[in-house]
Amino acid sequence: VSQSRYIGFGVCQSLVSRAYTSTQSRAIETTAAIVGGITKAVEIHPMEDLESWHLGGFEGRKKEDIVPQIQELVAKRPWAIPQGMGEESTKPGESFLDFKNRVLRAFKQILEDWEKSKNEIFLICTHFHDIQMIDAWLHNYDGEPGPEDENYDHRIYNRDVGYPLDKHIVTGK
Picture 1 (cartoon, rainbow, N blue to C red):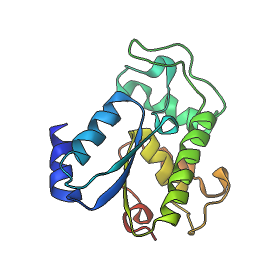
Picture 2 (tube, rainbow, N blue to C red):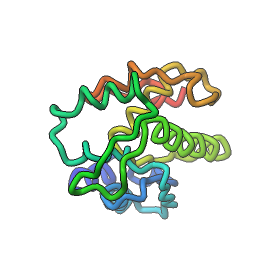
Picture 3 (cartoon, rainbow, N blue to C red):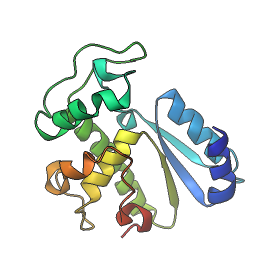
């Protein structure tokens, strides 16, 4: 949260007018810390569709132990639902397809809002897998949102090492 305050103070400083966030407490707290340093009122829009991927029994396990199984779900069995629930799970597992459709539905709504307000700067505070999903979808983005699978590339998503955001997100082009 202290890093979020730094971002809010140093980067956003009255530029952001709207913030979209997951409804999960960690994302809401981070969003509040970022926009807390902004001097003007910021509209905050919590979106359930921006929640992290519900990974069932994978949740709470070490990343290095589960990355190969998650990558297989993404590339070869996207309809499969991870079974069980981790100790800190808040919801049962969901398939990669359900997760993908949910996150892209939220992102397309944000894009539609942005189209109506191009002079505004939006902040999206969400989770690692959501960012990977958006980046994988935008990898071949041509400026017009198409069907979920039209631009989506699972090879981009499966770079599970914090793949840097594509130029489309940074520049909006």
